[in-house]
Every structure is written in structure tokens, then in C-alpha cells.
Amino acid sequence: MTQKFSQADVSIIGLGKLGASMVAGMASKGLKVIGVDVSAQAVMAVNNGLAPVEETDLAATIRSNSQLIRATPDYSDAVMNSSISFVIVPTPSDERGAFSLEYVAKSFESIGNVLKNKDDYHVIVLTSTVLPGSTRYGLLPILEKTSGKKCGPDFGLCYNPEFIALGSVIKNFLNPDFYLLGQFDEHSGDKLAAIHQIVSSNNAPIKRMSLENAEIAKIAVNSYVTLKISFANMLTDICERIPNADVDVVSDAIGTDSRIGRKYLSGGLGFGGPCFPRDNVALAFLGQSLGADTPILEANDSYNRSYSLNTLKRLKGRLPESGRAAVLGLSYKPFSHIVEESAGIYLCQALQNSGYHVSCYDPLALVEAKKTLNKNFTFCPDTESCIKDADIVFVTTSDPVFTALTPSVFVNSSARKVYIVDFWRCLSHNFAKTENIVYIPAGRSYVSKKKESLLSNLWERR
Figure (spheres, rainbow, N blue to C red):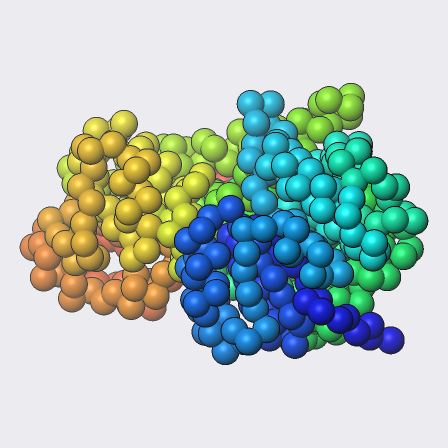
């Protein structure tokens, strides 16, 4: 049975991409929401019906539900006037590869100081990604010490991470595969489950469990997905070496098996972004610290970080060994400005270290890329200027700006032969057979005497 809340139903602490999107998403379901942030600019934006950060549909959703939303820098205002508080503040990786609790601890301390003077039962929900044990042993003592109260009878505590992708946060938040609900006790979990029942557009199942099980499950999901991506990239390498092989054909076949599934099984470039690489490293750190055997995670991280350089080695002999290289795509995925752990960035660096002059372009990530790459790269304002006079063009994301390219753009830019390396095979419909263009789709083999010989030598009877 759906529970109804009074006053401001929910407070959201942290107005970044996820926090602001949760504010908008919950308000779109009729909940009254108070956003909290230390940034005066973010608070002002929300109170003016504007988005504090860039994210798909965020501005429109805040604007259309502004009567249910307000923001404040004041923890007391937010906690006293809501029944449940979600904490979504940064947990950056530390020098060990673990997740720092510095910012979460400060938020919990502020919440505890408010709870000291609040008579009503209040639920605190940690949404930021943390390692197992963090909620119960690292953060709960802060709440109890600062509030002078006991978790359970006096207030509730849950761990409730989200599984979202930047660029589709609101959609993912309202339509999750499932809700992961770690609860201190049944009462805490009941209060949070009632929120999920209101918010979910797809009647998503709620998996309720202990705090520790939820902490393990969150980081395990992301680490498993990275293993699947690396496996697909390994298949890409294998398929390129076998005549008539095609990684997409293979992936479509094995992805039909219900034990495997098709998601994240497309060979391309390494995984990147703010979550996948660090979650994989953090789980390996946890395993090592506890004496668990986790070499598979360490090997996965090493494989992923070397993938761009190894890709160039794999292409050696098929590409000009010097000249101008154009890289289309610098963000870690399409529709994003984030270049953290981006395969496109790693590729740019590997190309420069191999002696190429590198020009690069991305529709959204150019500003961030300039902060990461040195001044010896040529940053271009559009696709056409990036590929002009290039000997090799690398397509690192399937952004629509790139998938819309036609052979005429390359033919007009140079009378020379141009090599196009397409890591996602998104241009094959246009470029498979074009004069003066050598199209190289990653993961699709071409027939050669050398490849046939290597394969046949394995099976010839001697």
C-alpha cells in the first residue's frame, strides 16, 4: 500500500547530476522536494526553476514541476521539513583506490545535528557509492554521536544506490531494472520502499537486504559489467585475426543466450567514465584488504588501461606509420562532456607518443578535453576541420554527428587515400566500398593469405 507523506515529502542533499535529477524525477511524481547544496549558484538555479547542471530533460522537468521544488543551503530547513533525506554527495577515490567518506561524513554530521532537535522519526538514505561496511561502521556512528539518538527506535538508515547512465539519468531513475534497498531495519526499509512505489514508472521490483549486501551488490554490478565489456573487446581482437569473422555477428549470437545477454557485449573501445573504472579498482582494493582472491579484477583494469595502445599495435602494418591522425570522439561515451578515463583521450595520447600529429573533435567534450590533453594537440571546432588533410581518422564514439558522415566529406578534404578506423562499425553502411578510402571496422576481419595460413596451420595434419 502506498504511503502518503506530509509537509515536504523528501529532501535531497547534493544537487549534482544525480541529485538534481532525483529532485526533478520525484517532483514529477507529485512529491514535494527540498534540494540542499553548498553551492549558492545551484540553490538559486533550482529556486528560479532552472537546472543547476546539464542533463537530458532536467531543465524541462524542473520547470514543469517547480511548484513542488525548492532548494536551500540549510540542512536544518531541509531535514526539519521532510520525512526522508537522500544523501548524494561525492565519494572520490583515494590513493588506495577506495572511496573517500570525507564529504558524506560532513553531510551525516550536519544531519545528525538537526536530528538532535527533531522529535519526528526521520530516515536517512545514502545514495552515494561506498564500499561494504562504510554505512554501518563509518557513517552510522556519526549520526548517533551528533544526534545523541539511536538508529532504529529514533531514526532510520538505508543504503540505496542508483543504477543510472549520464545523459539518461531521469529516465533511468524513473524506470530502473530494480531498486537496491539496503536497510538497517524493517521500519527504515518500509519508509524507503514507499517512496520507490510512488516514483517508479515501471513498477520495478525492490530488492531489500542488509546494508552490507546492498553495498556489495552495487559495486559488484558495475565491476561485472566492466568484465563483460572487456570480454567483448577481446572478441574484437580475436575476430580481426580470423578470416570471415565479425564481432557483431558473434555477439548477436551469444547474446541471445539468456545466461549472457546482449547488453554491454559490443566490441569497441575500453570502458571509461566516472564509475566503471574506479568501481572495478575499488572492489579489487576491498578484496585485497580482506584477503580475498581478486586477480580477475586487477587483470581487467590492466587490460582496459592498455587497450588503446594495444589497438594501435594491432593496426600496425595496416595504417601509415606517421602523418596526421584525426580523433572523432573525446568523451567516454556519446552525448556526454565527461572525459574521465576516456578511451578517446587515451587514444589521442597513444597516437601522439607514436609520432602522429593529432587533431581532435567532440561535440560536447572539447572544453574538458583541453584541460586533460597538452597544447600540442589540435582542437578543432567541427568534424570537417578535424578530418581535413588527415591521413587516418579514428571514430571512437557512435555520436550521431559522426554516424551521419558521408564519403563525400572525406573525398573533398583530400585527394590522398584516407584510412578510417571505426571502433563501433557505425559507418559501415556508407564506407564499405569507397574509392580512396580504406575503411577498417574494428572486429571485422578481412581475408588475407597470412591469416588463412595461421589458421590453417593449426589444423593441418602433419
